[in-house]
Structure formats: structure tokens, C-alpha cells
Image (cartoon, rainbow, N blue to C red; front, top):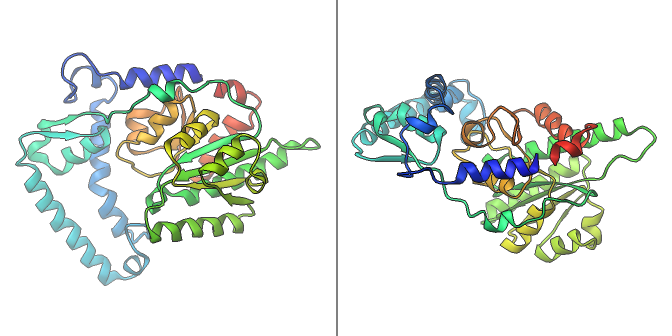
Length: 328
């Protein structure tokens, strides 16, 4: 599976003959049927406005607004006015290029006057170093890797909760034999004080979930992968902020499962890099990963949305009787 996934990812990244842009005709049409476009448009009509109308708290809908009918009404009026102005200005564009099918559907929904002029150009991804990584991976510990900036929309908390549930399942199913050692590494950029506070909150969440955790810099990561770094060696979760590219490539070359949890990511270049490195991803069933990268067929990765779905998908790739064959 790993070789097939890598070949498929390279095939998808290879530029098509002729212009790089496509407008929904020809090669792309069989991958994304008209009904899929309608589903995207319906979703975009209701995503932000619907969430606010339901008064659902989220990283982009603060609890103090969600809990207030008056503030919710004001925000809805703002959203609708902004959408009207945004659509009017976008409709005047002569050329529109989106970075994936999900973004294209968003633009077609809001920029109706320019809907027929929306083209798609997938972001470039340098796969040379990733393709050079070995496909054979060390069996223990079985490394699960997340690569994402420590921003609220990346939803690292969901990763920790699903991983904690996975460890409980592993312990319960092991019986008299020791469960396999699973290690989750969360690598990503910490840009400022708010990100640092978010990372500290994730560490506190890991503690509350009963997860042993450590924080590792680039040197610690190298030692961890080489069998050193005693504190990290005992951890079940390792937070690895602000790694350099060489250390990140080391992790990609050791990982056996990738993890992505951002809802409605426009494309998902991190998922592409996991696949190009031969790491089967468990990605969020929305946005770019759903429409352009992993897709629902399960040939090059798995999709999930809820904590339970993530735990089940991770179990398929780590604990199931044929997990090793499936990862390979």
C-alpha cells in the first residue's frame, strides 16, 4: 500500500499536458461530478452562517458571541453584508485561480458572476527528498506523526483524545501480552506567545487524559529516533515545536501513520507530504483531503471526522490483525 500510495500521490502531483489550470472540464470532471460541486456549494452557503445561527462555539465563533442572541444577530448581519460585498467584488474578476476543488466550490458559490471563470491550480510540492526516504520502517515504537502549526483550527486536541482512546483500546485488547508501544509526535510551528500558550494548554490536556508527554527540540528528536532522549523515550506523546527541515524529514522517514484533523482545510499540503513520504494518513473527511487528496475510497489513506472515527481509523492501521500489511 505504501508504494502504491506514493506512486498515486506523484501521479496526482504531476502536471497535466497543456496548461496547468483546469476549469472543471476534461480530466478533472470524472473525479468530481456535478453533484459534488452542488454539495460543496450547499455546504458553503451554510458553513459559517449555519454555525453562527446554531450558536455553536468554535475557534472562529467565540463563546461569548455564541451565548448571546443579540451578538449572534449582529454577527449574522455582518456575515451576510460581507458575503454580498465579497461576491460583488469577486464577480468582477477576469481570472480566478483556486488552490483546490473545495476552494473553487467556495468561490463558485459566492462569486456567482465569475463562477464559470474559476480555475484550479494545485499547490506545488517538492517530493524529491520525500521520495528518497526508506519505505521500510522500524517496528517499535510505532510512530504516529502530526505536522501542523499549533493554531486552533488544526484541532490538536482531537488528536490527543483519539490517541488516548487508541491506547485504552490497545491495552484492553492486549490481554496477557504487553500492548504495542505507540508514540504520537506532534510537530509544528510555534509563531508567537499565543501559540506557546496553546501548546501549554495541549500539554495540560495530555496530562488530564493520562498521557505521558515530553517536549523535544531538534536534537532531542534525533536522539529519540536513535534510541536516546530518556524523557521522550518514556513518553506516549512528544510535542516537537519549530523543527528544522532535516529533523522533520527524519520523522517522516520513521513515521508509520500520519494524522490530520483540520476541518475544511482548503487543500492540505501536509497530507500530500505524508503520502509522498510513504506514510498512510488519517485525514479529516472534509475540504481538500476529502475532495482532492485522500478521497473516500480508502486506497491511499483513511478519512475521519469524530473522535470515535479517528480512533477506529487509527486502530485499523495500528492494532488490527492485518495493520502492518495495510500500512505497507
